[in-house]
Image (cartoon, rainbow, N blue to C red; front, side, top):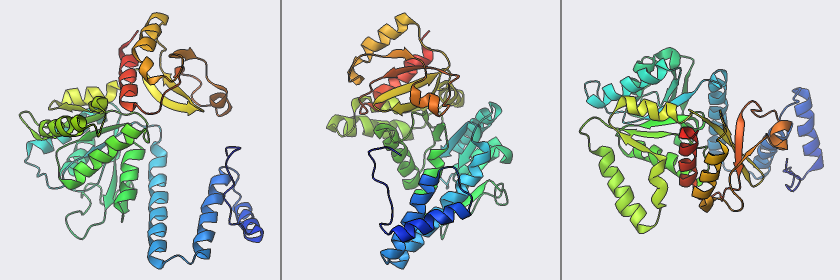
Length: 346
């Protein structure tokens, strides 16, 4: 816990002591601070005499997240791609074949495919990847959304009541995303994903907007984004760098896999952004990148670095090379451009 952060407790020493005793009885040694705060929230909800509906929302959300965390845990080291798209896409639609073929291509490269577990594009993803390489996060609806028969009895299927917990799990665990044409739900997922990347609430990741040859869905969408949103100044003109529009399955697969050609991950240590890489850039490349991306550095440039003390203390990927910069935490589309350069630079 940060030394400047006030401890989150009930304010009643006797209750706090009982919660601590409960953790002792459960033989909890790791992450006690987080579990203590979860228990504290439960105690405060009771003390607040919170409305029953609010308690039901809290209860369902916590149970759903706990189950989803458990389902994903055995596959934490397996790269995963989430596929979004319409539940109404029929098996004879060319879009269905595009989704299935992309899932096949990525599964063949060792990726797992995460879907919303329903019909349409979601079923195509499961069909392409195969059940063994699929994880489903289903939403319970009064219509339309029975789980795909392929996943109906699979232990890697999670049923959820709320869209917000479902979207959390569809996005949190994946290292890449493919979005095919769909309705309100698909666009909601696509815009939320882009919002998370735009604001830095999600780690940098590749996003492919996949159509069929001759399709106009994403081209029309992109015109709206550029001509209306960017022109009005409500998004950054560089925000189109967050996604690739393509009608080619091989290009889509290459975009997702290629994002990790050299890039591995990022971590903030205080105000310093550390970018972990398979191979650090050469001095000449570093000089060029420092000049090219000076606009997103609040001071200095981009430097090769050894693991920082905070990384060493947590044994955080010490095997990787890394660079660091004082990132302005605002221009995440430009950060994506920097990662692209690090992936192709020598």
